[in-house]
Amino acid sequence: MQPTPIGSLLGNPNAWKQHADSLNRQMMEQPKEYWESVFPELKTADLPPSFYTKSVSLQLMHILSDRKKCEGCTGFLACPKEEDAKGHQFSIGLGETGIFEQVSKCSFYQEYLAAELENRLWSFSGLNEGHRRMTFDNFPDSQKRLNRELCLQAFQFANEYTPGSSMKGLYIYGSFGTAKTHLASAILNRLIARKIRVLYVQAEKTFAALSDLYFRENRDGLPTRSEILDKYISSDVLVIDELGHENVNESSIWALYTILNGREPERKPVIITSNYSPVELADKYLKRASEETGKRAAALVSRLLWLTEPFEMFGEDYRWQGLKIQE
Image (tube, rainbow, N blue to C red; front, side):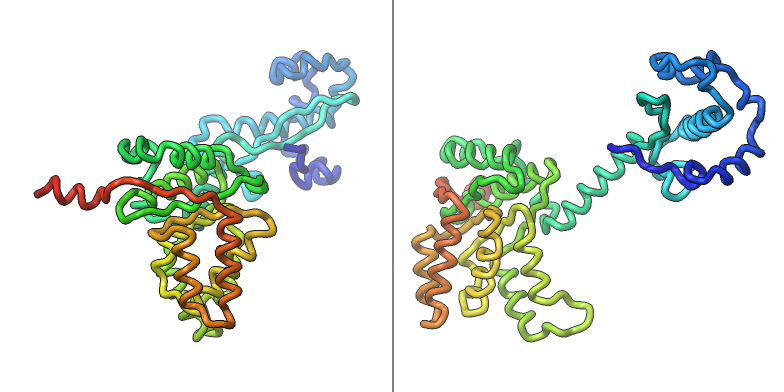
């Protein structure tokens, strides 16, 4: 982090002079040996005694005063400093011409900012508490064995994808209850831990809501359809869960086409879960599309395959297995 200004006192000599009147003047007369004992880092500079003028001593006193404020600090929210100084620490920089003052974020502030970022990422993601509990660690072992290549691909994507890379997403299809949503959620949970912005949506709810918004675009306090679509397009990774369960009509075809078309130029990956294979999904869309939107339906399937690698998820319905065990 580059040094930043530490306030008007540094840039305003008159302000410094007024401030100095309230300080212990004896401190301003302290010799080199004193300041080197207070700030061991000054010993490496080995500056001549004449360097420690009143002006320099005043700067060092300011840094010393700041450090004392940090003693016993229990966290950013308890920081006793004011306004922009909260969460920052002043330190001595050593340059060719002597010393200079610099400021950086303290460890408590860095932890606070990291937690705030993670909260924003969770809030943006659309994942609920149930999805957050779906991780790679508790993914069913039976499914790992049956779908080894898919699980390895999902794990690699979750750990190696970075925004702007050319990695494709995944199109995960198979029968009900084979943990497709679990695997997609595990990917998103790992990406959020890596501070990557993700978004999870369910196809049926999402496209129904977008269709409804068409009739109330201008209501006060409600996001417009364009604003919602922009959110879907801008996320680094987008998961569309249970694609094909939505009511396939002109509105849903248009919305999905708009999302994929917006993500394609930057190769932003999507992760799809579906009970339909890509061929079956294409057939479903083309049968429901009018002549006018038939080409758009074909184009969106093409974009979908361009942005994803298809994998079939094998296995039995674990929900049904649970019911049989209870019986």
